[in-house]
Length: 284
Image (cartoon, rainbow, N blue to C red; front, side):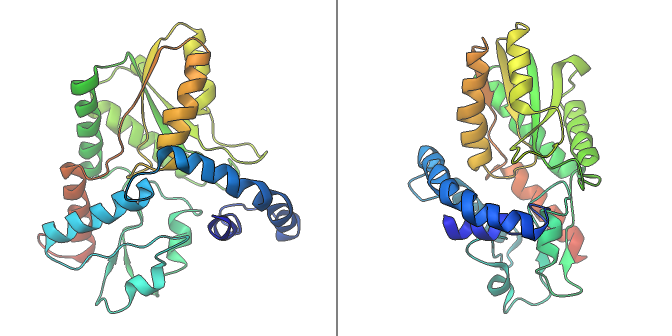
């Protein structure tokens, strides 16, 4: 955990502070406390097969390979398996960073690791197949669990400074999803989660919005996280556990966390469409 966090938080795209300021803080304070805290959080969401993010990513790769009948490999930007070895031996591969909305700290960081001229799906925040897969996931949750009067559409936050068009893309995704679900303006909101440090981040914040909604009398909300295509710490622990406690402490009764796309057939079909379009092929 310490090695992973050192690599992740040591990336200047992730924490865009001057190195002479940030690195002493990272190694002198953050890496002394954060690994144990993260390990405790992971213990609450761990699956029998391992980390949810890794488990779902492996399954997505397998299902995509079966659907398209081509080799599919997965890699992690930080940690294992790394990107470089995953690309070896592949002829003219298509790389799909699994970040629907482009940001320099996510997709931009992946692009730095790729050979020049690589075929890359840079973003897919408004792709019809991705939006349709999200809508299908929400409708499936509603069919099984019932529908809350408010849908919170929560994205990973970024510092406002240097966010580029990320916020605009997140809001475009949310608007397209709301339209697909035929929601009125008062039935959904966009928020941002996973704030880190003391800089001003994109607002409104997810936990504060949940508190405000509960105090205003909203007792039931659903939360969907379109920026994550696989359930992970930020969805299962941050929203499913911590944000739920925040909502309930403020007077809310029920927070419905909608599953990420994971292995949903609509999402595997969307992945196939993205790869097909980027490769120039006529069909999967």
